[in-house]
Image 1 (cartoon, helix red, strand yellow):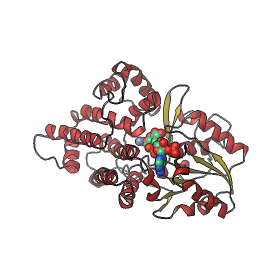
Image 2 (image 1 turned 30 degrees about the vertical axis):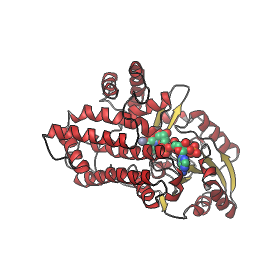
Image 3 (image 1 turned 90 degrees about the vertical axis):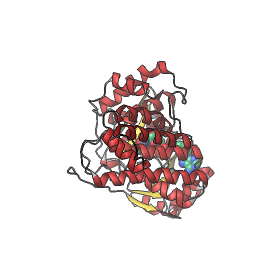
Image 4 (image 1 turned 180 degrees about the horizontal axis):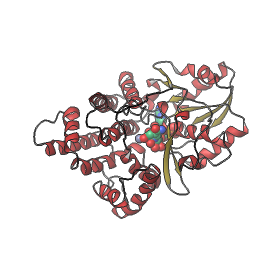
Length: 387
Ligand code: NZQ
Ligand code: ZN
Protein backbone atom coordinates (compact mmCIF):
# COMPACT_ATOMS: atom_id res chain seq x y z
CA UNK A 1 0.00 0.00 0.00
CA UNK A 2 1.58 3.32 -1.08
CA UNK A 3 0.96 6.71 0.55
CA UNK A 4 -1.97 8.56 -0.92
CA UNK A 5 -4.30 11.54 -0.57
CA UNK A 6 -7.90 10.79 -1.51
CA UNK A 7 -10.04 13.92 -1.86
CA UNK A 8 -13.02 13.87 -4.20
CA UNK A 9 -14.97 17.15 -3.79
CA UNK A 10 -17.84 16.28 -6.16
CA UNK A 11 -21.26 16.07 -4.49
CA UNK A 12 -23.38 13.28 -6.01
CA UNK A 13 -27.19 13.27 -6.00
CA UNK A 14 -28.05 9.70 -7.05
CA UNK A 15 -31.43 8.18 -7.88
CA UNK A 16 -34.98 8.72 -9.09
CA UNK A 17 -36.29 12.29 -9.57
CA UNK A 18 -33.00 13.99 -8.71
CA UNK A 19 -32.91 16.08 -11.92
CA UNK A 20 -35.18 18.89 -10.59
CA UNK A 21 -32.45 19.75 -8.06
CA UNK A 22 -30.09 20.94 -10.83
CA UNK A 23 -31.39 24.53 -10.68
CA UNK A 24 -30.70 24.99 -6.97
CA UNK A 25 -27.35 23.17 -7.21
CA UNK A 26 -26.19 25.38 -10.11
CA UNK A 27 -27.51 28.79 -9.06
CA UNK A 28 -25.43 28.49 -5.88
CA UNK A 29 -22.50 29.54 -8.15
CA UNK A 30 -24.22 32.25 -10.16
CA UNK A 31 -27.38 33.18 -12.07
CA UNK A 32 -25.75 33.37 -15.51
CA UNK A 33 -25.51 29.75 -16.65
CA UNK A 34 -24.00 28.25 -19.80
CA UNK A 35 -25.99 25.06 -20.55
CA UNK A 36 -23.86 22.62 -22.61
CA UNK A 37 -25.43 19.61 -24.29
CA UNK A 38 -25.09 17.25 -27.25
CA UNK A 39 -26.82 16.61 -30.51
CA UNK A 40 -30.34 16.02 -29.32
CA UNK A 41 -30.83 13.00 -27.06
CA UNK A 42 -31.85 15.21 -24.11
CA UNK A 43 -34.61 16.75 -26.21
CA UNK A 44 -35.87 13.33 -27.29
CA UNK A 45 -35.97 11.84 -23.78
CA UNK A 46 -37.54 14.86 -22.05
CA UNK A 47 -34.51 15.76 -19.95
CA UNK A 48 -34.06 19.16 -21.61
CA UNK A 49 -37.54 20.29 -20.52
CA UNK A 50 -36.91 19.13 -16.95
CA UNK A 51 -33.65 21.07 -16.77
CA UNK A 52 -35.08 24.26 -18.27
CA UNK A 53 -38.05 24.09 -15.85
CA UNK A 54 -35.67 23.71 -12.93
CA UNK A 55 -33.55 26.69 -14.02
CA UNK A 56 -36.69 28.82 -14.61
CA UNK A 57 -37.81 27.94 -11.09
CA UNK A 58 -34.71 29.55 -9.61
CA UNK A 59 -34.57 32.53 -11.97
CA UNK A 60 -31.39 31.50 -13.77
CA UNK A 61 -30.39 33.24 -17.02
CA UNK A 62 -29.49 30.50 -19.55
CA UNK A 63 -27.16 30.69 -22.54
CA UNK A 64 -27.25 27.45 -24.52
CA UNK A 65 -24.26 25.75 -26.18
CA UNK A 66 -25.74 22.69 -27.93
CA UNK A 67 -24.11 20.40 -30.53
CA UNK A 68 -21.30 18.72 -28.61
CA UNK A 69 -20.43 15.65 -30.64
CA UNK A 70 -19.17 12.33 -29.38
CA UNK A 71 -15.35 12.64 -29.17
CA UNK A 72 -15.71 16.42 -28.64
CA UNK A 73 -13.84 18.86 -30.87
CA UNK A 74 -11.53 21.74 -30.02
CA UNK A 75 -13.29 24.05 -32.53
CA UNK A 76 -16.67 23.55 -30.81
CA UNK A 77 -15.04 23.99 -27.40
CA UNK A 78 -13.56 27.34 -28.51
CA UNK A 79 -17.06 28.48 -29.58
CA UNK A 80 -18.38 27.55 -26.13
CA UNK A 81 -15.61 29.55 -24.47
CA UNK A 82 -16.43 32.58 -26.57
CA UNK A 83 -20.15 32.26 -25.72
CA UNK A 84 -19.35 32.01 -22.00
CA UNK A 85 -17.18 35.14 -22.16
CA UNK A 86 -19.65 37.18 -24.26
CA UNK A 87 -22.52 36.36 -21.87
CA UNK A 88 -20.48 36.75 -18.68
CA UNK A 89 -21.49 33.24 -17.61
CA UNK A 90 -20.65 32.52 -13.98
CA UNK A 91 -21.24 28.73 -14.00
CA UNK A 92 -21.47 25.94 -16.57
CA UNK A 93 -24.00 23.09 -16.51
CA UNK A 94 -23.38 19.99 -18.67
CA UNK A 95 -26.24 17.65 -19.56
CA UNK A 96 -24.95 14.59 -21.36
CA UNK A 97 -22.35 11.86 -21.38
CA UNK A 98 -18.59 12.08 -21.12
CA UNK A 99 -18.22 14.09 -24.32
CA UNK A 100 -20.55 16.84 -23.11
CA UNK A 101 -19.08 16.91 -19.60
CA UNK A 102 -15.50 16.94 -20.93
CA UNK A 103 -16.16 19.80 -23.34
CA UNK A 104 -17.88 21.69 -20.50
CA UNK A 105 -14.81 21.21 -18.29
CA UNK A 106 -12.58 22.61 -21.03
CA UNK A 107 -14.95 25.58 -21.42
CA UNK A 108 -14.76 26.19 -17.64
CA UNK A 109 -10.97 26.26 -17.90
CA UNK A 110 -10.81 28.38 -21.08
CA UNK A 111 -13.47 30.93 -20.14
CA UNK A 112 -11.27 32.62 -17.51
CA UNK A 113 -8.01 32.96 -19.48
CA UNK A 114 -6.86 34.89 -22.54
CA UNK A 115 -4.69 32.13 -24.08
CA UNK A 116 -6.01 29.28 -26.25
CA UNK A 117 -7.54 26.39 -24.28
CA UNK A 118 -5.41 23.81 -26.20
CA UNK A 119 -2.36 25.01 -24.21
CA UNK A 120 -3.84 23.19 -21.21
CA UNK A 121 -3.86 19.95 -23.20
CA UNK A 122 -0.23 20.18 -24.31
CA UNK A 123 0.96 21.01 -20.78
CA UNK A 124 2.03 24.56 -21.75
CA UNK A 125 -0.42 26.20 -19.29
CA UNK A 126 -2.04 25.08 -16.04
CA UNK A 127 -5.55 25.76 -14.80
CA UNK A 128 -5.81 28.44 -12.12
CA UNK A 129 -9.41 29.66 -11.61
CA UNK A 130 -11.93 27.88 -13.84
CA UNK A 131 -15.67 28.52 -13.83
CA UNK A 132 -17.60 26.10 -11.58
CA UNK A 133 -19.38 23.15 -13.20
CA UNK A 134 -22.49 21.12 -12.43
CA UNK A 135 -23.63 18.12 -14.45
CA UNK A 136 -26.59 15.92 -15.21
CA UNK A 137 -25.15 12.59 -16.38
CA UNK A 138 -27.02 10.81 -19.18
CA UNK A 139 -24.71 7.88 -20.03
CA UNK A 140 -22.83 5.48 -17.72
CA UNK A 141 -19.28 5.28 -19.06
CA UNK A 142 -16.52 7.88 -18.69
CA UNK A 143 -16.65 8.69 -14.96
CA UNK A 144 -16.20 12.36 -15.96
CA UNK A 145 -19.14 13.25 -13.69
CA UNK A 146 -16.97 12.60 -10.62
CA UNK A 147 -13.39 13.22 -11.75
CA UNK A 148 -11.14 16.06 -12.87
CA UNK A 149 -10.19 14.73 -16.30
CA UNK A 150 -11.28 15.61 -19.80
CA UNK A 151 -10.40 14.62 -23.37
CA UNK A 152 -10.74 16.84 -26.47
CA UNK A 153 -9.84 16.22 -30.12
CA UNK A 154 -7.82 18.86 -31.94
CA UNK A 155 -9.15 18.19 -35.44
CA UNK A 156 -6.46 20.40 -37.06
CA UNK A 157 -3.68 18.10 -35.77
CA UNK A 158 -5.74 14.88 -35.37
CA UNK A 159 -4.65 14.76 -31.72
CA UNK A 160 -7.06 13.55 -29.04
CA UNK A 161 -5.40 14.65 -25.81
CA UNK A 162 -6.56 14.59 -22.19
CA UNK A 163 -5.46 16.24 -18.96
CA UNK A 164 -6.74 16.50 -15.40
CA UNK A 165 -6.80 19.30 -12.85
CA UNK A 166 -8.44 18.99 -9.42
CA UNK A 167 -10.06 22.44 -9.86
CA UNK A 168 -12.17 20.92 -12.66
CA UNK A 169 -14.07 18.44 -10.52
CA UNK A 170 -17.80 19.09 -11.00
CA UNK A 171 -19.24 20.79 -7.87
CA UNK A 172 -22.39 18.64 -8.10
CA UNK A 173 -23.35 15.80 -10.43
CA UNK A 174 -26.86 14.46 -10.69
CA UNK A 175 -27.07 10.76 -11.53
CA UNK A 176 -30.62 9.59 -12.23
CA UNK A 177 -30.40 6.07 -13.74
CA UNK A 178 -33.83 6.53 -15.36
CA UNK A 179 -32.25 9.15 -17.64
CA UNK A 180 -29.92 6.48 -19.07
CA UNK A 181 -32.78 4.15 -20.08
CA UNK A 182 -32.87 5.81 -23.50
CA UNK A 183 -29.23 4.88 -24.22
CA UNK A 184 -29.25 2.34 -27.06
CA UNK A 185 -27.71 -1.14 -26.67
CA UNK A 186 -24.50 -0.29 -28.52
CA UNK A 187 -23.58 2.77 -26.43
CA UNK A 188 -24.67 0.94 -23.27
CA UNK A 189 -22.10 -1.76 -24.07
CA UNK A 190 -19.39 0.76 -25.09
CA UNK A 191 -19.95 2.52 -21.77
CA UNK A 192 -19.54 -0.70 -19.79
CA UNK A 193 -16.36 -1.50 -21.75
CA UNK A 194 -15.02 1.96 -20.88
CA UNK A 195 -15.72 1.40 -17.18
CA UNK A 196 -13.96 -1.99 -17.33
CA UNK A 197 -11.01 -0.36 -19.11
CA UNK A 198 -10.68 2.35 -16.43
CA UNK A 199 -10.27 -0.36 -13.82
CA UNK A 200 -7.89 -2.53 -15.87
CA UNK A 201 -5.57 0.40 -16.64
CA UNK A 202 -4.69 0.65 -12.94
CA UNK A 203 -5.09 -3.05 -12.14
CA UNK A 204 -2.45 -4.12 -14.67
CA UNK A 205 -0.01 -1.20 -14.45
CA UNK A 206 0.47 -0.88 -10.69
CA UNK A 207 3.91 -2.10 -9.61
CA UNK A 208 3.01 -2.48 -5.94
CA UNK A 209 3.15 -6.25 -5.29
CA UNK A 210 0.60 -6.23 -2.46
CA UNK A 211 -2.67 -4.33 -2.92
CA UNK A 212 -5.40 -6.66 -1.63
CA UNK A 213 -7.90 -3.89 -0.78
CA UNK A 214 -7.71 -2.26 -4.19
CA UNK A 215 -7.61 -5.61 -6.01
CA UNK A 216 -10.89 -6.83 -4.56
CA UNK A 217 -12.50 -3.41 -5.19
CA UNK A 218 -11.32 -3.41 -8.81
CA UNK A 219 -12.20 -7.04 -9.48
CA UNK A 220 -15.67 -6.39 -8.06
CA UNK A 221 -16.17 -3.33 -10.27
CA UNK A 222 -15.22 -5.32 -13.39
CA UNK A 223 -17.66 -8.11 -12.44
CA UNK A 224 -20.40 -5.56 -11.71
CA UNK A 225 -19.82 -3.69 -14.98
CA UNK A 226 -20.18 -6.89 -16.99
CA UNK A 227 -23.13 -8.31 -15.04
CA UNK A 228 -25.15 -5.08 -14.91
CA UNK A 229 -24.47 -4.49 -18.62
CA UNK A 230 -25.73 -8.00 -19.40
CA UNK A 231 -28.92 -7.26 -17.44
CA UNK A 232 -29.46 -3.92 -19.19
CA UNK A 233 -28.99 -5.50 -22.62
CA UNK A 234 -31.77 -7.95 -21.71
CA UNK A 235 -34.11 -5.08 -20.70
CA UNK A 236 -33.01 -1.54 -21.64
CA UNK A 237 -35.38 0.09 -19.13
CA UNK A 238 -34.35 -2.12 -16.17
CA UNK A 239 -33.92 0.68 -13.60
CA UNK A 240 -31.99 -1.39 -11.06
CA UNK A 241 -29.55 -2.67 -13.68
CA UNK A 242 -29.09 0.87 -15.05
CA UNK A 243 -28.46 2.07 -11.47
CA UNK A 244 -25.86 -0.65 -10.84
CA UNK A 245 -24.08 0.12 -14.13
CA UNK A 246 -24.19 3.88 -13.54
CA UNK A 247 -22.65 3.80 -10.06
CA UNK A 248 -20.08 1.18 -11.16
CA UNK A 249 -18.91 3.41 -14.03
CA UNK A 250 -18.61 6.42 -11.72
CA UNK A 251 -16.61 4.48 -9.11
CA UNK A 252 -14.36 3.06 -11.84
CA UNK A 253 -12.65 6.43 -12.41
CA UNK A 254 -13.26 8.72 -9.42
CA UNK A 255 -9.87 8.18 -7.79
CA UNK A 256 -10.94 5.45 -5.34
CA UNK A 257 -9.46 2.45 -7.20
CA UNK A 258 -6.07 4.13 -7.63
CA UNK A 259 -5.72 5.23 -3.99
CA UNK A 260 -2.71 3.38 -2.56
CA UNK A 261 -1.55 1.80 -5.83
CA UNK A 262 1.26 4.29 -6.32
CA UNK A 263 2.39 5.00 -9.90
CA UNK A 264 -0.06 3.68 -12.54
CA UNK A 265 -0.48 4.24 -16.29
CA UNK A 266 -3.27 4.63 -18.87
CA UNK A 267 -1.71 2.82 -21.86
CA UNK A 268 -4.85 1.28 -23.40
CA UNK A 269 -6.41 4.75 -23.50
CA UNK A 270 -3.20 6.28 -24.85
CA UNK A 271 -3.53 3.96 -27.86
CA UNK A 272 -7.33 4.11 -28.18
CA UNK A 273 -7.43 7.90 -28.31
CA UNK A 274 -5.63 7.73 -31.66
CA UNK A 275 -8.36 5.48 -33.06
CA UNK A 276 -11.02 7.97 -31.99
CA UNK A 277 -8.96 10.90 -33.30
CA UNK A 278 -8.35 9.35 -36.74
CA UNK A 279 -11.52 7.32 -37.31
CA UNK A 280 -14.04 8.88 -34.86
CA UNK A 281 -14.55 5.45 -33.32
CA UNK A 282 -16.83 5.40 -30.23
CA UNK A 283 -14.41 5.41 -27.29
CA UNK A 284 -15.59 2.12 -25.78
CA UNK A 285 -15.55 0.38 -29.16
CA UNK A 286 -11.96 1.49 -29.71
CA UNK A 287 -11.03 0.20 -26.28
CA UNK A 288 -12.50 -3.28 -26.83
CA UNK A 289 -10.42 -3.51 -30.01
CA UNK A 290 -7.22 -2.51 -28.19
CA UNK A 291 -7.56 -4.19 -24.77
CA UNK A 292 -7.21 -7.87 -25.81
CA UNK A 293 -4.08 -7.10 -27.87
CA UNK A 294 -2.55 -5.05 -25.07
CA UNK A 295 -3.37 -7.77 -22.51
CA UNK A 296 -1.91 -10.55 -24.70
CA UNK A 297 1.36 -8.59 -24.84
CA UNK A 298 1.58 -8.05 -21.08
CA UNK A 299 0.15 -11.39 -19.90
CA UNK A 300 3.40 -12.96 -21.07
CA UNK A 301 5.40 -10.52 -18.95
CA UNK A 302 3.29 -10.71 -15.78
CA UNK A 303 1.39 -14.02 -15.80
CA UNK A 304 0.88 -13.95 -12.00
CA UNK A 305 -1.21 -10.77 -12.11
CA UNK A 306 -3.17 -11.90 -15.15
CA UNK A 307 -3.81 -15.34 -13.61
CA UNK A 308 -5.21 -13.62 -10.48
CA UNK A 309 -7.52 -11.59 -12.74
CA UNK A 310 -8.63 -14.77 -14.56
CA UNK A 311 -9.41 -16.57 -11.30
CA UNK A 312 -11.06 -13.71 -9.40
CA UNK A 313 -13.16 -12.36 -12.33
CA UNK A 314 -13.82 -15.46 -14.45
CA UNK A 315 -13.25 -18.27 -11.93
CA UNK A 316 -10.55 -19.80 -14.13
CA UNK A 317 -8.58 -22.20 -11.89
CA UNK A 318 -7.27 -24.99 -14.10
CA UNK A 319 -3.93 -25.12 -15.91
CA UNK A 320 -0.53 -23.50 -15.44
CA UNK A 321 -0.20 -19.85 -14.43
CA UNK A 322 0.55 -18.91 -18.06
CA UNK A 323 -2.48 -20.88 -19.32
CA UNK A 324 -4.80 -19.29 -16.78
CA UNK A 325 -3.43 -15.83 -17.59
CA UNK A 326 -4.08 -16.33 -21.29
CA UNK A 327 -7.55 -17.81 -20.76
CA UNK A 328 -8.48 -14.77 -18.68
CA UNK A 329 -7.65 -12.48 -21.61
CA UNK A 330 -9.72 -14.60 -23.98
CA UNK A 331 -12.63 -14.70 -21.51
CA UNK A 332 -12.73 -10.90 -21.40
CA UNK A 333 -12.46 -10.72 -25.19
CA UNK A 334 -15.35 -13.19 -25.43
CA UNK A 335 -17.46 -10.90 -23.23
CA UNK A 336 -16.71 -7.94 -25.53
CA UNK A 337 -17.96 -10.07 -28.43
CA UNK A 338 -21.04 -11.13 -26.43
CA UNK A 339 -22.05 -7.46 -25.97
CA UNK A 340 -21.24 -6.69 -29.63
CA UNK A 341 -18.26 -4.47 -28.94
CA UNK A 342 -15.56 -4.96 -31.62
CA UNK A 343 -12.45 -6.91 -30.56
CA UNK A 344 -10.11 -6.23 -33.50
CA UNK A 345 -8.95 -3.35 -35.71
CA UNK A 346 -10.22 -5.39 -38.65
CA UNK A 347 -13.77 -5.34 -37.27
CA UNK A 348 -13.40 -1.56 -37.08
CA UNK A 349 -12.21 -1.63 -40.72
CA UNK A 350 -8.91 -0.06 -39.71
CA UNK A 351 -6.29 -1.27 -42.22
CA UNK A 352 -3.06 -2.94 -41.07
CA UNK A 353 -1.08 -0.41 -43.14
CA UNK A 354 -2.34 2.38 -40.87
CA UNK A 355 -0.55 0.93 -37.82
CA UNK A 356 2.65 3.05 -38.18
CA UNK A 357 0.74 6.36 -38.32
CA UNK A 358 -1.56 5.31 -35.44
CA UNK A 359 1.52 4.44 -33.38
CA UNK A 360 3.14 7.79 -34.27
CA UNK A 361 0.01 9.63 -33.13
CA UNK A 362 -0.31 7.61 -29.90
CA UNK A 363 3.37 8.21 -29.12
CA UNK A 364 2.75 11.98 -29.08
CA UNK A 365 0.19 11.45 -26.28
CA UNK A 366 2.51 9.00 -24.49
CA UNK A 367 5.12 11.78 -24.46
CA UNK A 368 2.67 14.37 -23.06
CA UNK A 369 1.64 11.79 -20.43
CA UNK A 370 5.36 11.04 -19.77
CA UNK A 371 4.95 7.28 -20.43
CA UNK A 372 8.68 6.68 -20.93
CA UNK A 373 8.23 2.89 -21.23
CA UNK A 374 6.40 3.27 -24.57
CA UNK A 375 8.13 3.82 -27.89
CA UNK A 376 6.79 3.56 -31.45
CA UNK A 377 7.95 -0.06 -31.89
CA UNK A 378 6.19 -1.26 -28.75
CA UNK A 379 2.96 0.51 -29.73
CA UNK A 380 3.18 -1.01 -33.21
CA UNK A 381 3.75 -4.48 -31.70
CA UNK A 382 0.68 -4.11 -29.47
CA UNK A 383 -1.42 -2.84 -32.39
CA UNK A 384 -0.19 -5.84 -34.37
CA UNK A 385 -1.80 -8.04 -31.67
CA UNK A 386 -5.12 -6.22 -32.25
CA UNK A 387 -5.64 -6.96 -35.94
O1 NZQ B 1 -25.13 13.94 -28.62
P1 NZQ B 1 -25.95 13.37 -27.51
O2 NZQ B 1 -27.39 13.73 -27.57
O3 NZQ B 1 -25.34 13.60 -26.15
O4 NZQ B 1 -25.96 11.75 -27.80
C1 NZQ B 1 -25.00 10.92 -27.21
C2 NZQ B 1 -23.93 10.45 -28.19
O5 NZQ B 1 -24.47 10.33 -29.47
C3 NZQ B 1 -25.69 9.62 -26.86
N1 NZQ B 1 -26.36 9.69 -25.56
C4 NZQ B 1 -25.86 10.15 -24.38
N2 NZQ B 1 -26.77 10.01 -23.40
C5 NZQ B 1 -27.89 9.47 -23.98
C6 NZQ B 1 -27.63 9.26 -25.35
N3 NZQ B 1 -28.54 8.75 -26.20
C7 NZQ B 1 -29.74 8.42 -25.68
N4 NZQ B 1 -30.06 8.57 -24.36
C8 NZQ B 1 -29.16 9.09 -23.49
N5 NZQ B 1 -29.49 9.21 -22.19
O6 NZQ B 1 -24.64 8.66 -26.78
C9 NZQ B 1 -23.59 9.04 -27.70
C10 NZQ B 1 -22.26 8.96 -26.99
O7 NZQ B 1 -22.22 9.96 -25.99
P2 NZQ B 1 -20.77 10.33 -25.37
O8 NZQ B 1 -20.94 11.43 -24.38
O9 NZQ B 1 -19.79 10.55 -26.48
O10 NZQ B 1 -20.35 8.97 -24.68
P3 NZQ B 1 -19.44 8.72 -23.38
O11 NZQ B 1 -20.16 9.06 -22.17
O12 NZQ B 1 -18.89 7.35 -23.52
O13 NZQ B 1 -18.24 9.77 -23.53
C11 NZQ B 1 -17.17 9.48 -24.41
C12 NZQ B 1 -16.14 10.57 -24.25
O14 NZQ B 1 -15.63 10.51 -22.90
C13 NZQ B 1 -14.21 10.62 -22.98
C14 NZQ B 1 -13.89 9.85 -24.22
O15 NZQ B 1 -12.58 10.13 -24.69
C15 NZQ B 1 -14.96 10.35 -25.18
O16 NZQ B 1 -14.56 11.56 -25.78
N6 NZQ B 1 -13.62 10.12 -21.72
C16 NZQ B 1 -13.55 10.95 -20.64
C17 NZQ B 1 -12.90 10.58 -19.48
C18 NZQ B 1 -12.85 11.46 -18.31
N7 NZQ B 1 -13.30 12.68 -18.38
O17 NZQ B 1 -12.36 11.04 -17.25
C19 NZQ B 1 -12.23 9.30 -19.36
C20 NZQ B 1 -12.67 8.32 -20.37
O18 NZQ B 1 -11.66 7.35 -20.49
C21 NZQ B 1 -12.91 8.87 -21.72
O19 NZQ B 1 -11.67 9.08 -22.36
ZN1 ZN C 1 -12.24 5.73 -21.08
